[in-house]
Image 1 (cartoon, helix red, strand yellow):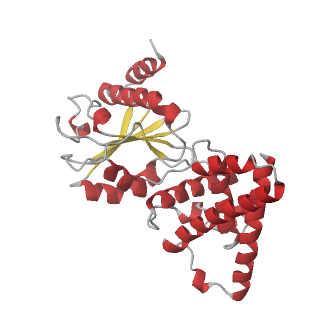
Image 2 (image 1 turned 30 degrees about the horizontal axis):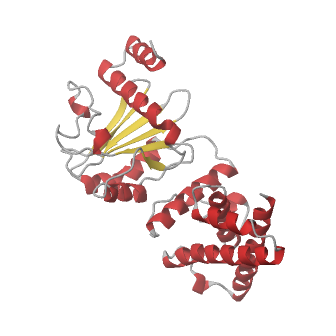
Image 3 (image 1 turned 90 degrees about the horizontal axis):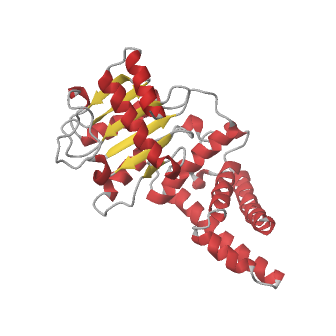
Amino acid sequence: MDSISQKVKQWIDEGKDPRSAHWQGGLEAMLNVFMPYLEPGRLIPVQALEEEELPVFLAAMEIVDLSPNLSAAFLPPSIADKMTPPESAEELQHIEKGKPSFKILIARPGKEQRILCAEISEQAKKPGMDIFQSGALLGTYNFENQQDCFEQLNKIIRAHMWEKEKWRIDDYKRYTINWFDKVMDLNKGTVCVERDFSFFHSPTLIKSNKIDVIFILISEMMQKRLNDFNDPLQEAVSVIQAIDDIDVKNAQLNDVIDKVVFEFLTVIKECDLVKFDEFTDKETEQFNRESAATIQKLVKYIHKK
């Protein structure tokens, strides 16, 4: 008997409803399959999406706001259609058979893992979500349509799935980076974020100020990209690093980094994340100084890699 089967048996022996116990066991088994491909704090599609599936994922990505250690999987119809709760559990039936299902699975780690399963298909008879822990159904939320479901989805995730433990500085950083990644992907300033947990919105979380955090965020994003072998920036930098002439190398590195920093700042401005026109003269001076310093720090970071 595998570990999940053992847990399901234990839950039932403890008096939990066999329907919810078996369904949570099935959801955990599915998450275990995809866990190696998930990234904490981010909603990840479990396979390449078809063109018609992409708008559903992008809408969910804009809304779903995760604390930094939650795992979340986006399941398109080719997988979600095959995941059906026990027929006898009417309260868990959100979509009719034959209709294309889109599901989101979210897992909160801990001694007793908590699982949220959301049905967000436009064709669901009652889009909504169910929350499970220790084989028990903790709560069910049903809505009239997909739009109502999306409007409430993040509030429910925030209330029932976010981790309650005290966050470390690294948690605030990862949460903020994950948020800004989505802003960059969607080019929208409407991506959901809890401002009290984002160092970009609340600089005191990392003992900083509103100018410095702009460049701390950009530096963190840049370092992440420079360490991703699949990122075009990393490839471009590798080509430059092969240049023997140190002056030419540094000039080209400065040029590349300067362009990428400008791209980040452009998104920040276009998405209205910072009111640049409201800067004081002192803040503008600090901004220009930190912009130049950040480029030099990133060039040094590349040389040390």
